[in-house]
Length: 187
Length: 266
Image (cartoon, rainbow over all chains, first blue to last red; front, side):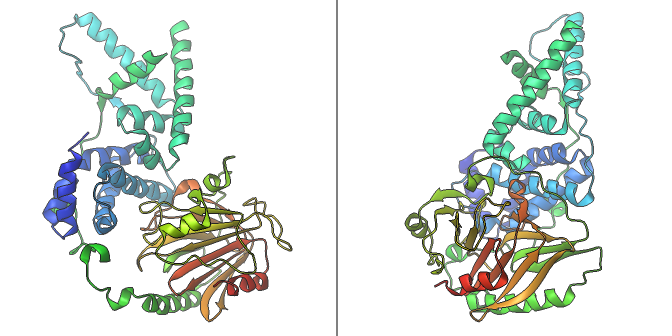
């Protein structure tokens, strides 16, 4: 979670009075999660950048409607995600989202053996390949909840579906992924 | 098997995301001034935000829209009317089938309520068409960002004589009333070539009558971004501006029936 709501409220109040520097601080605070959310939806880094930028401008114009005390992050993500979906729709194409593992990722503080590191990296690669091979709907909901670490409400706004649908879709997506993991393990 | 969920959570830290661009500062191109809501600003509304100016502007935009309509063009984007965006396309996309759910959720109407409870949330009077009588169900759209800033209510008439139950909505009639700032959008409509749109007058107010084949209908947020889960096919629809309240009547009815219902509002 980036920033604290209390800080956001101060910045929003300043931005609502026309302080663009305060709004730029808000943008810096949320641009990473906004850009990544747009990337998950569009599957394209340039499209995600455009969508996030346009989303932040739209949010600035609409800031007067934002109710102080509400959570800013889902509100911003909704606008950016809508912008991303509109871009996909208007262009008539959606790039295949292809998530990759960071090279040389070393989790945790412990110092495992080189063999253990290699096995763990291989397992992660295989699991991510299975996520990438899922249907678009399954991949989007898993990426939103686990990789972007969005809340249920935020995932619902990002994907443009009711929160209840997020739960059921996630449950089904996990079941399908689990089946593939088990099939791979028994093969 | 929570292990899989743990593995996915763990995997998040290992994902290589594209580098996040810096969107602040000069990259952002912010508009020169942020609009301030009247309640925040605490000043009298400027003339262009008054309901009379709104109605006058609506007439102008509607006229301009109709003059601009060329049915043979492949696509005419953005017939931007106040509160309603109407697109004309050659090939109407087919929305996904609506999920089986309670009416309000299925059609994205908001939360179920009563007429009195809905009225207590609104700063303007809900106008019930006298010719239809009391609605069978009432739904209230949550405030922004879901609905318009002035509020939006939908009256549902399950069955009414002479108006068949629509296969698209499952009821005879939907009457939606909404209010908001002049620059807000409430709905978006996408019309195929076999849908007719006609300018009509309802009790002295300008409106549209949309008929023929079903058209695509979606609720939008105030910025005009569609709530995609509400995208659906809609049947014949009358839209008009009643002194600042946008009224939408949808059902398998004729233009004369729709206008008769509309003029009984008050």
